[in-house]
Length: 294
Image (cartoon, rainbow, N blue to C red; front, top):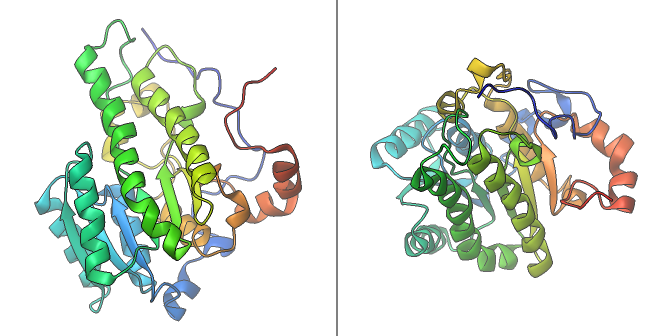
């Protein structure tokens, strides 16, 4: 079966698209002022790509950063990369299988025990299969593996971190995808899992009134996950650098965008334009959340 852009691809805010750093999200001031010097950040899925860049940006802004992932050798590379950029950075590694709820709890506790608090969780772990099979064609274990990593893996860290984030009035960022909106005959396990995460975030803010949470599409970044999906071969764009989502997250967790709490945010949106043009409508009509259209 061949792929074509499906229903949902154009279900997006009609705002200017950004594919690089721009003034609203420029991290230079945060780096200069060390704006996150008293914050503790846990980045899950920090071994490569987007998660690695997110960890680096927070460390450069002064945060103490715990990086979590499945393989110790790649975590060590992330730590070394950060230390090379910022020699006085506070970084720890947590080798963990995100599907293991006990291991996720242990990783969160390790960060809290070391730094006595947790202010920001970026749940960036993810898995994908090539977009080349329908549900009927895909091996069921392979289908469920993607769903389990993407949903249970995030849930495990959300559940473990929420008490500490409530204490610090912190931030929870769940890395979702534009795939959450798509209805396509291929990639069901991935797209359904990301749609589920958007609703998970909506539940988080209902049950935790002292934290801010976002479901976050990081843009179209050429990551290993994108390569595994083979979406580029089918015509999907990959024109965003990993620095874009990293800079956007510094903005979203700075206190300047708390009005987007519980909502879906796309890293490629011009966020100054979103606030200036769309804020009132988004809040009045409760937009950027999952709804049944009638």
